[in-house]
Image 1 (cartoon, helix red, strand yellow):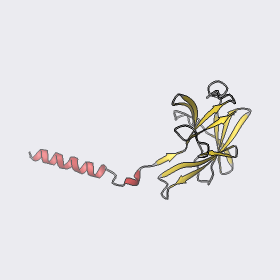
Image 2: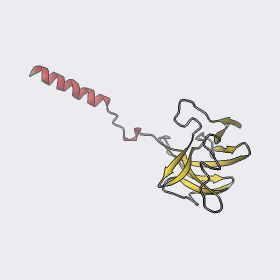
Image 3: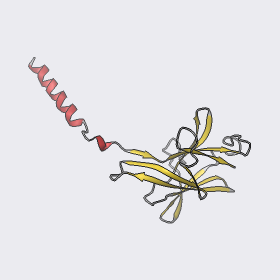
Length: 157
C-alpha cells in the first residue's frame, strides 16, 4: 500500500508540473488563403491551365524578393491544391513578416505573376496572428469579396 501511495504521489506531481496552466499559451497563426481560379465561363483552371509544379511563391522581405522553398515541408513552395466542398482551390501561405502589409508574389508560370498584400490582426503578445484584409493586384478582395467557407476569394483569368 505504501508503494501504491508513493507511485500515485509521483504520478500526480508529474501531471501537475507538466501542465501549462496558462490559457494564453496556444498560438493561432492564420496566413493561408484559398484562391478559386476560373475563366470568364466559370470553369476551374487549376490542374489544367495552371499546374501545381509551375506555381511558385516569392516573399518580399526587407526590399528583397525571396523564393519560397523548404524541402522538409509537405508543400515545399507553400502552395497546394485543396478540395473544398467539391471545388478545387489553390491554398497559399502568404508572407507573414512584420511589415504592416507583407507582400507575396504568386508566379503562375514564367509569364504571369500576381501580387498579394495582406494585413494581419496581431494580438498584443503575438499569440494570435490572423489575416483580416487582402489586396490582389491592388484590389481589395478579402473580406469584401470573400468566397467559400475558408479565407478565400475568386480570381477570373
